[in-house]
Length: 467
Image (cartoon, rainbow, N blue to C red):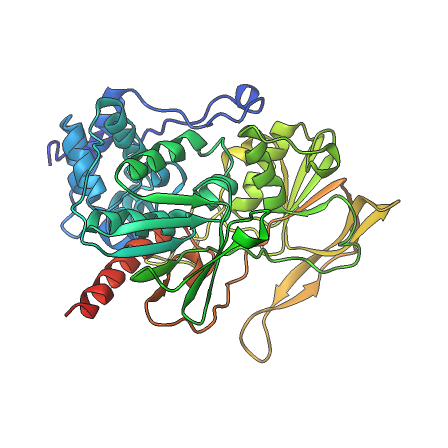
């Protein structure tokens, strides 16, 4: 611990965001960076606690005090090695993780100003790529093969770990590029897709094979791959398990829908219809005008108060929305501290994102009753204020009306209400499910942790076959 009193004298300093008037005109990353001196000074605030709760709170078990100390001392390469000993993709989590470690930080609980672990993580990784600390590894092959179905964070983590163990790994991805939710769900203003491309390039150079445009199923012990070929004779490739194991990392592809009257109107879309299409447009893909989901010149209503809803708000602003309103069926959380969610639980408090700062009317305890339209197109959404009352039978509170229905004007409604947990058949031995495909929708950092854990299980399984 290089400066044992820094936490007493150095206040928390965040890099902050680009000015609103600048950032809403492009999809460049909104978060800025600190200079080297300030970044190292922020790392010095880490107290190297006797019981570092950050270790426990992080699904990856990141050793924050160790790499923060190395960063403070200017030992950037050492900091990167300590960081990647537990986290294979700190360039992702350093940008989009909600930083569970920071909500567990002793400084957070004593002063409300946690160590800037997430920003420090991103800074270390960018320095590593810039100065060549990220090297290409060439593992010795053991002659065993593993298929990974899906290239989201859990699939990439499993593939990366198994490749380093010496397995020959093939990743099958249904989309045209790797990344899953990272690429097609998270906007570029939070995660530039070149960051994903950079990591995929490293993995490819290290021997991981990626096959795109492939839909995969498992039937009676056979891996069935549909490559989308127009040639029906070559469209389906049926393989009698040339792989020693298969990892299913297909995520949560089914969004929670809202089946109320008027759902069929043009202008009502699932959130990912907007987000994934916009990311594809930025990647150079063109869509016919009738297929474009755009907020340009429209009053936009976002239904759902989570991160996906926030991403819709930021995207709508950049597309030129006339106005943006976000409604949430649950009550508004308190600001700063919530006695109903004490440590060690996650503090449910009001979250204001960069997208919210760009302009948005936010409302809570609002239930959606009906989509209204004219000539088949959305013109408004009928909603009603509600309140949550105790359930006489126990369990979940009961929703009750708390006001008269009203109509919110909208030509575009975006449903951002989460995703349904996938159901899986009984797979044969040697098939493993990880990430959101196993748990339901969760955090990227948890998906990465699940991928690493699954890689260890695959290794134990294959090793057991040979013993």
